[in-house]
Length: 283
Image 1: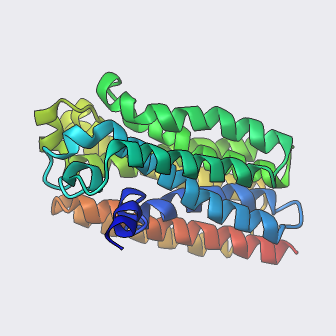
Image 2 (image 1 turned 90 degrees about the vertical axis):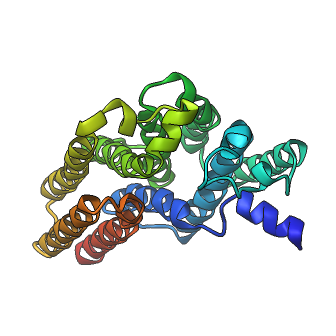
């Protein structure tokens, strides 16, 4: 049971916030396609299961890359590889199993989805290294995990639209924003162990830039709503999102960066429900 618990912790199943923050962008892509086509239950299930598997793969390869560093950071010192609850060989085997399951899931999709998924899968593996060599690894994370919207959209449609590009750009900005807040929580530790982040690169402007990127995401949703002639009900969604933005800023002003990061789960829920509402109204 201890081993099973260690594997669950390695994949961060015990901390599902990361799964949600990958799932919501993916569902936004799927439901955007669903505005003009009948949604398939199979595709919804693929997106949900895929989000769990991909996020788990990302966590495992991240911990394999960082297990020596994790020992030096208070927040990560208790992770299975850092404590020795699992060894590197076991972690690699687990990663290969998760990777094979992800590939098997792709057999239920189409050729376009497979091509896009494999392309972005390489970035998932490279992301942990980017923290050492790229000043702003959050950009790599945004491009990589934001791709869930493109992959999910391709399950329903191969007609890539302006709306999809706007959504993807907005989601990338959103991910960079909330991961900057996450990085601000670890800024002092990252400086000690020489790990890069936008929190460090942007310095005193980090919060200002993160807020701007967050609002850019909201602007992308508004533009999508206009282009796709959403109902006036979507105004309520935007108002709710702005209220969350105001509350998030209060958390940031108190230096509660981890809570400011976690509140993005609610942002994703509301945005997704907004798209679902439009699908129902359009039908």
